[in-house]
Image 1 (cartoon, rainbow, N blue to C red):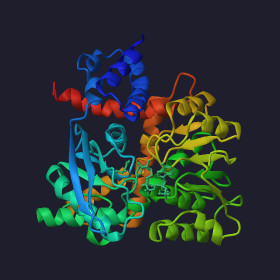
Image 2 (image 1 turned 30 degrees about the horizontal axis):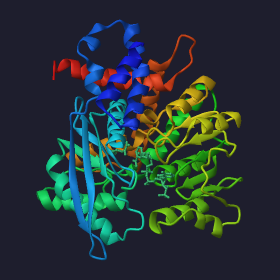
Image 3 (image 1 turned 120 degrees about the vertical axis):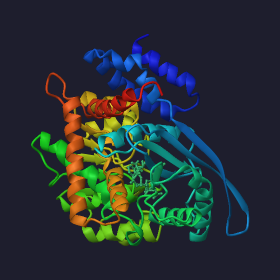
Image 4 (image 1 turned 180 degrees about the vertical axis):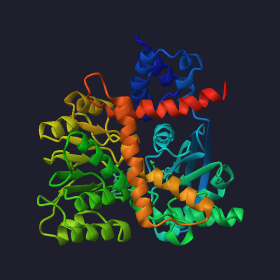
Length: 448
Ligand code: NDP
Ligand code: 2IT
């Protein structure tokens, strides 16, 4: 048994029944352990840094009790995984989805620690959420749930302690209810949550940041090959916050967005969506909160494929932007067979480890989520700075800063991911760069 296997087996033994967490740790161990062997620096091993990094600082689990519109008492479970605050206060989103469990939140908190280290800003890693399913709930039900969730969470967070934000199933509406309740309970007005509305301390570009940032990262990867987004056929999965702003920026840069998806299926538009069609879809998903099926009913050029993922549609660039493990081995093979040259992960861990292996073997451009989707948390970090200074920067300022941060993240991947043949492995690059920053801080603190 080699060192990696031994390490991963230990993590599996200590975290039984948490497959997503095992998957995220294994991917990092496969980059970091060979790197440590290569650089021959015994300090990290002696201090058991990777063992310590895979154990969260603490986890809070709590009951969330609320009343639905029919006066039934409902009970959900709330979580906050405070993973690592070595380089800054805990920072990361809240996910509201029926699938939420400790395995998923631990994988997300673990990845967040590396991602936040890459942003160049001082933020530690955390994630939280609930198994609450927002689908089909009224506004009042969402409000009552968010208020109850925050009634417990508020005692564990703070602008110097832990700063939550949104994630899947937790958008502008939910963040507003959460912030309103936090403000009421603590009688403070601080930047303890990011992704806030613009009238109460939110930052320009935060809404768009993850999607725009993902496209900026793809642009940097393509530049390495002296190529560009203009004219490329792009498939984007999901049709939420990340996916729709990815699509918006792709269209702006001349890309042809030929597919989007949701839980019901995939829309295909061979000639590429135009801005009016995208605006229609934004309204459909963000305001009407309906299925993509409706887009096909109202637009002739759009076809709806019931219950299908988008990966068998021939494309040049793929932007998985929905959820974890949405690209399996077979999907990865199909993408490669159809000539896809770039996969840029807007979602967190959307590709299984087998799928990632296939992309790396095929030597296509593959940008892992912890680098490619770091734009969202980066602008969250900038929202924290603006809140602390009690001022607001302009949209142009923030867009410029976001572009610079994504370029910097790309450069870190190049620095630590380039192999002897000159090929850039973005997985190794992101994992090693993130590890180094957090590990150096942990070493400085001694044995804690
Ligand atoms: P949203 O809730 O806004 O959108 C999620 C989209 O993905 C929806 O269209 C949803 O379909 C679809 N989806 C969710 N689960 C599934 C599933 N099991 N099968 C098929 N489709 C699914 O979330 P976000 O856009 O904010 O997040 C998307 C991904 O990006 C997540 O992995 C998140 O962790 C990651 N991310 C988000 C950031 C952010 O700032 N929001 C930052 C960095 C990463 P439907 O419309 O039918 O519900
Ligand atoms: O996965 C992520 O990076 C997010 N959901 C954003 C976290 C944040 O704090 O803005």
